[in-house]
Length: 548
Image (cartoon, rainbow, N blue to C red):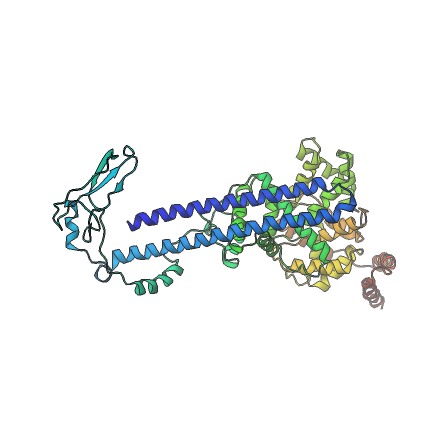
């Protein structure tokens, strides 16, 4: 019987999981309806804005409050049920392993097969009930009309409306000596001991990608996540909508805080967003698990999903915002064709060779099969970002790598500031400081310089921000290499550096030409970038020493 009780309780637990999913679907549907309502009414008179916002806040509060109350009640019942199941398992263990102290079978139990109880039905056998007045047998544990423990000589009156009689043996029961204090003392340790119930989690799945292994490890080890009994299913469109919602919330946070209160990783922000939306941490973690499961399912199908998961895992920092800025630029064009694409890439990739633009046009034609649209342009950009062949990313990566003189794989802020100042002098100092601090929180890759370049263009009404250092473009202006971080690229960088070190013999004329070029460049940049004043003196001194 205990095993059956456990089975029934576990079935009820599964039903609680289904109810929780229905509650989450209903809550998210209510939020989406409220959002649509706000968008529809957003075009009303300005005098009604304050009243409209107040009305939306009140309605949102009612939705969230009602959801939280229902979820807290459901979780309370679920926890009680879980406690009951574990108590039943402890009792079952005592039945099996502790016969001497907990369970004593009575010899009279064997005589139950000779006992008979009777029930009557007044509805053609649909239901049966026990007759009143029949004596109860303590040894059989039931009201019996015949049993070996007593003699019967009474007459039993049957109601006139009786249609059926049912005779059965009493149910088999165990006579136990139950000590409540001992049971409760053993109950609490058993409730927290999960060692006997091993559940394989996703972070142990060796077939998962490295990105998702990091995500699941963070979820279970650092966020105290658990594996729910039942996951919800999401369509790809719903996942894309959710991703865009996360991006928009992060965008608003960064724009409004001006970098003062956003020094947290993208993953930390993601978990804070989920907990704020779903109010109850346990529910937020359950929804997070549902989202991660859906993201893993669509990972190979969607570039948007791949880019998002790289941010949650800490591999990327600013790709999502770089992509959002590019979408804003593309949205400014009413018609999408090859001419508009040419104009767009000249804004995003300024000061580049004509061959680069022509090659990118050919790549887009091949990618979209000569069917131009905003979606295809965005898909092409996401393809380049996902495959690490996006020109800005490659250019700034290789340019900044030259300033890593000790080959430690990164730059201190002073080095980063000096390097970006030479390449992109218009970059604001505060923006560089904020993005550098945010980039330090992630450890895999960094697109900070490429994003700063795009952001400067965005804040200047999409006026192309010229890259000053022409020699960087000459050396690193290539396109469509296989990878930025691969062995081929490292060899390419080393070849360039070695070629600079193994130049032809230095002459007076060559030094004079170089000094003259550098003086002109420094003279043009000094008013805007005082850091470059330090560049001129060492070369001039080198020439003087050479003349001596």
